[in-house]
Amino acid sequence: MEAAVIDLKHLEKSFGKKQVLLDVSFQVQPGEIVGLIGPSGSGKSTIIKVMLGMEVSDAGEATVFDLQMPQRALLANIGYMAQSDALYEQLTAKENLIFFGQMKGLKKQELNAEVTRVAEVVKLTDDLNNKVEGFSGGMKRRLSLALALLGDPALLVLDEPTVGIDPALRRQVWAELKRLKELDRAILVTTHVMDEAELTDRVALLLGGRLIANDQPAALKEQYQVSSIEDVFLKAEGE
Ligand SMILES: Nc1ncnc2c1ncn2[C@@H]1O[C@H](COP(=O)(O)OP(=O)(O)OP(=O)(O)O)[C@@H](O)[C@H]1O
Image 1 (cartoon, rainbow, N blue to C red):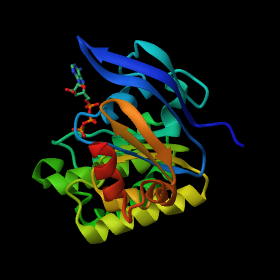
Image 2: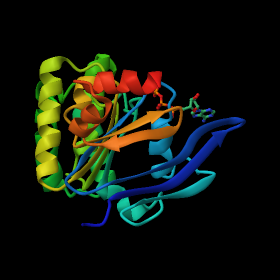
Image 3: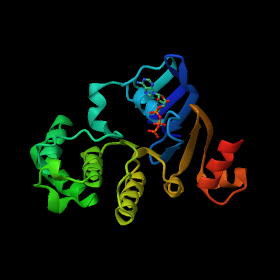
Image 4: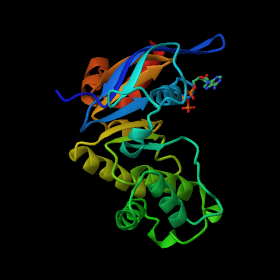
């Protein structure tokens, strides 16, 4: 088996008296889409922040490409889409893409080609020269996703990437994720949308900061004797 891109071992994290992560361990391999699923407040974003070195865990170990984050050297290898958009409102979509692409170290010619490519994936080609301040919430989400895709990173970490994105484009985004997976990219995605969970290779089900399941969607449905991931979720929550 190839080395894991993301390797989380026995993570514990509290905020004040509230324990948010309890003994969380899982891995994401190259060529794998893992869905991190759980109700609001179950700790999904906290896992991502610990993994990316934006929060420090109280115990356990989190490595990305065998290194503890943050690591400047890994910046170009990771496409991260946070839950809230961090965009320059006064700049156009294209200027945002160029700015972030330069930070990732993309050279001019490559960068121009990448801007065209990622704008096409999220259907923002016709809006590239418009200022972000005039964008709808969904358009900002799409631009944030385009930023994460820039430079074709080996690892994508996407926190709720399809919120506010209409069904047709959502389908297209998932087709792109599948394509990237075939190219051996590793993808970790959080979602509230249960039929999206069906599109992953593996579902990591988080409840109250504890990982209660980590398996292929089909295996989970069999284990819980139900016909959808939504039902797995409801059954697990009820138990
Ligand atoms: N910096 C912080 N200080 C105090 N509490 C925090 C902090 N960050 C998160 N929490 C708490 O930790 C818990 C888990 O939050 P987290 O954002 O990881 O959940 P989530 O599963 O990503 O939720 P959502 O789906 O709503 O984004 C919540 O109870 C939240 O209030």
